[in-house]
Image 1 (cartoon, helix red, strand yellow):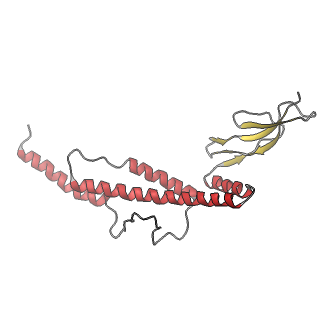
Image 2 (cartoon, helix red, strand yellow):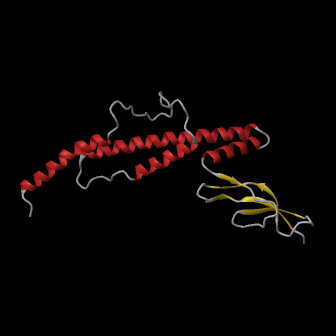
Image 3 (tube, one colour):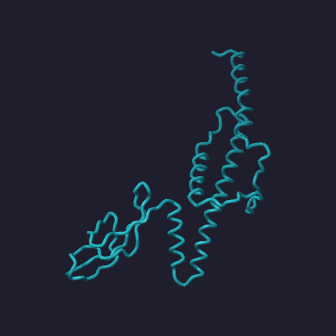
Length: 193
């Protein structure tokens, strides 16, 4: 059984740690909190980050938010206030980054609406895929169809070529730098029969 003195010593140790934890969790002095309005912050960075940078930062912020410490067993107001402040700041950062992604998608949407053909949209999407690290690939003529990486989109008849070989790549395929398939290449194959 613990004595009253032991309990006070334990609580005193917790009280000494709480201000340090709250100071570590609180935003830096002079850091302005964003208002609830959707207006961009007054002091924006001079260069706009790439979509890859935005998505990487979003993933890191989501992970940090998910790993934020849960509320302590014994209520400690300073610690709870610090955790709440950190969660609020992370939420604001996530919202700002999501807005940057939406701005880019809106720009692509604007290109699609302004043009009769989709060539500009295809170019914009190709640029975004490249920024995100997607690798473009095409099927080789006269290779056999590999259903893991090719999608047969058309059949043609060329009597001088073997049956079932690829005649043309209609749309390129995409994979990640690690080799994960994102989109199969659309191909036209030869059908002799």
